[in-house]
Figure 1: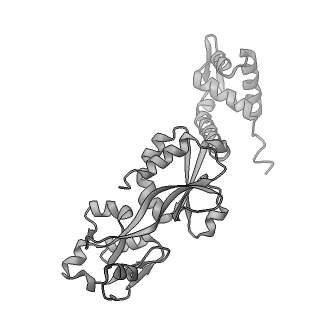
Figure 2 (figure 1 turned 135 degrees about the vertical axis):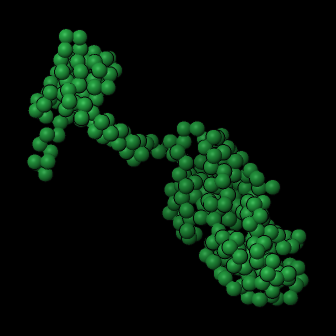
Figure 3 (figure 1 turned 90 degrees about the vertical axis):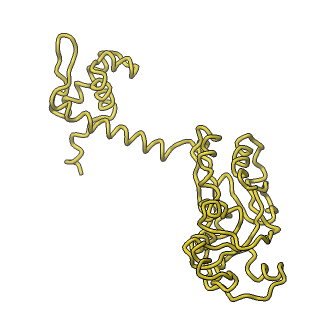
Length: 289
């Protein structure tokens, strides 16, 4: 280790070298760095002594990089850039970041399509998205904002309704082409708090249909399965709107099953009201119908 770092010079000397090499002048480098010309010359001399090579050719009308200096300059500039980027990434002030947590399905189907609008309304902020895989994730989260599914009543949290959940059967057009009566097709179910096929049948007064052929962990998985023609999905109208508009799915009934629960943008109740929170709420409400 000692041998590999024997030539490692002071970062200050390297910084001065980069400025002088880039600007082609010790005087210009001194002005940029807030040093005297003599201080720049001294640091360059110390650096050359440490490396054992001349990095500049001294001329009557200034200086020019030597062959060794030209060869080293791009490595120096790349190293300085990487140090700067890593410092910004790792040690940026916490207030410059805004954390938003939601389920994987909601992030993919609702938040990500609105990221451009969120970025436009949050200048100077780094938006950090986090996935809620299990309910306990919320208790351990450090996100500034959370999107939760429920009735809007969470102790210690301020909640603003984004949109409600409305369900209706839908399937890929190719699947329907193989059978004119969709009620006999395989059904897809989703684990979690949504109403399901039994509630749909009770609401419409229909006889019980076949048990679901597929049960998936997340709604977005179920949506992709339906788009692939794997079965009929009791889909969320708000979350499936893009698939319906794009023709990847089509509605099978004009009837709808509304849920009392919905999606809410929440934050700690002690948080002060601010325009930024209102902007996020406005963007995430967009397109909810």
